[in-house]
Image (tube, rainbow, N blue to C red; front, top):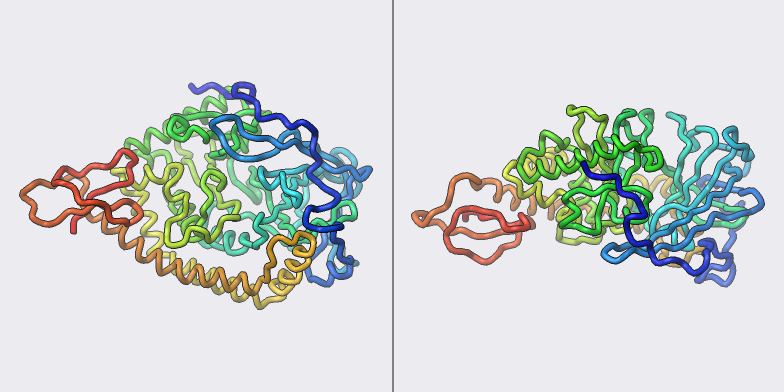
Length: 484
């Protein structure tokens, strides 16, 4: 049984000399913080979310740099401050109001969240309500305490096509969100997504039981209080698993031992070709297809959330949802970086072809419809009142944070072009993938064969010809022999 790892077991991150407040009253790119009039915010067509903290206090954190052998810039020692959060539309229509802070009764607490996004001047936040509610505008579906104020760090609204694809691919959970302008203690902080947090909630978020698990394959494990390791860590030493549910503060020795043992069995089953006894293969194939369609270039930083319904043998490991889309549309005419990361190279190279066949089948049966539906959605969104409101709001955000100037109609056009080209590219690459499947993995090739053999990797790239030999995989599992 793997032990329960604790933060004290690795070198501490480089300490900060001073406690740094990540909210600067004077942004680096502006002479004075830009504060549009409330009338202009209301006129944009989007709701305004007000956060007023007690005594005007601001949440703080220390910067945290990785120990040797790890990577990633993040934050630690996060403080929370209490206060009130309320959402208003058109100056008089109050959509939600938490009330003033009274512990366990009303109000909220707010703290910084994220890794690199937590170190930016425009930071992300976690809002924790004292009383469960559903502040996202619309028909209330369920109640929860934890809600995220998030943004795409490149300022592009990549969440729109990405979560649309997540839903069309029928991944187990598609987070709901809405766009809001954030005013924190009277200062305009910009345009944000008020979005559901990644956590257990069978009524509306990730549906796992009390004995179930939500874990993350996480590059920032070194900044968590507890994590666990598996044999995969030996080949990818900068990655480990962290807990989303149960919380690391609450998890028992039995629970930590169970899930670490189970994940080690999962990895062994992939090597042995028996992975379908442990994995919900369909969710793994759909998740990767989503990342490939989006052309994600982020590797270790692209969140990988896995779930297990309960602690019974019948419960399979599932991929939960796509998340964090800052590097969308970066891997042009190549697979996403996730295609060659985590379990996926081993699954493609496995003698058990179920994963590869599932990936191909989903593309052939649903891929074009997913792309075409997303294209229609982006075009319709750009012409809708919501799209026009977003364009106005992006311009207001740009005045506050003049990093990228984005017009939503132009952005939507760029996504449409990307998806149209990506669909054609995927068709070609899937055909190449099918070619490699047509070769028997059990019948050896011998000198009596007169046809020509070629080597291709899993990206469809031609490799040097080799002498006649039995079929085998390269050490990294990414090279196979195919027949011409």
